[in-house]
View 1: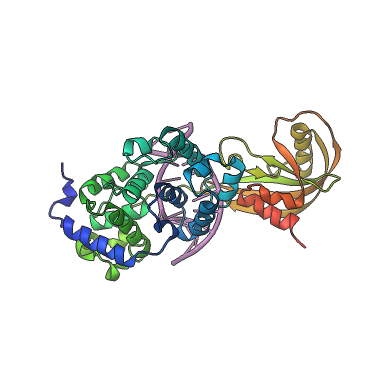
View 2: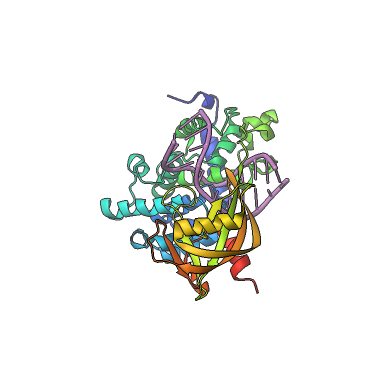
Length: 363
DNA sequence: AAATCGGGGTC
DNA sequence: GACCCAGATTT
């Protein structure tokens, strides 16, 4: 059944204009040097909600360290988290390794080439499945990301809210008819490249657009009013107190974050949530004694860190402390004493990298 | 369907 | 500030 929005639409003309524009104008990017499915896969995971310019150095370093699916499958978790440090959405790399291990074991290292199989892999959703299938295997499968929704909402004047999950399916339905069957890879990448370079969120460059003649929003002069996207609610503030504890040997106490949730399994300095009422030094001292069996003397505040996440804001007050007495009881927490020059071996969230910089490497 | 999950660039 | 980014998973 043909999508109604495609009535009276020159599908072939659109395909040819878009594909030829892409082949002529595409950027040179490291993941475009090969169609190896593993390399395409890694790039697509890194590019989720992350800008091309940000990804490039991470991608190059990642491929040097983990050049094959087998290499990534055998890597230690500490190493993959360190390779991802600063990129954000850290479950991406843990899911990627888990999925790569499944590919090595179940598919003999060969990334599957059907939507059903590839979609069953951890971290591979509708977009990434379509991207790998089209780019690595040349299959005519839609790959709908933010760029594609913006471009197609303008070309076809789709006024559904692109913030709603259901809206993505509208574009997938269009694309099964619209996608080039001759070069699905160039077509999908062309849509995204167009969104990145020409059909930008604000002030799209319609005068330079290869598919301007096919764009209904441009014909109506309403391209800047599309797409429709509802606003997300703003972040909630969370006040924290963190402490950099040193022992007599000058080593520093770091703690591994929980297995699940925010910044899972990354390292951090011990910290607690605080309210305006509590004395930070006393609260930290009590916390270290209760959770780490450590008597400490908390000294003066040394730093304030404000860190903005998608859905919350951390306002961290940082203190220094020295160990008074270390007992030998067991603790429920995973922690470690590290030397100053060993700290770079561990993956920290950016919020705590700020603490490392300010507190440990000033002077 | 809404919330969670990072971080940085842009206007 | 608010928005956006080659989104997926959990609730």
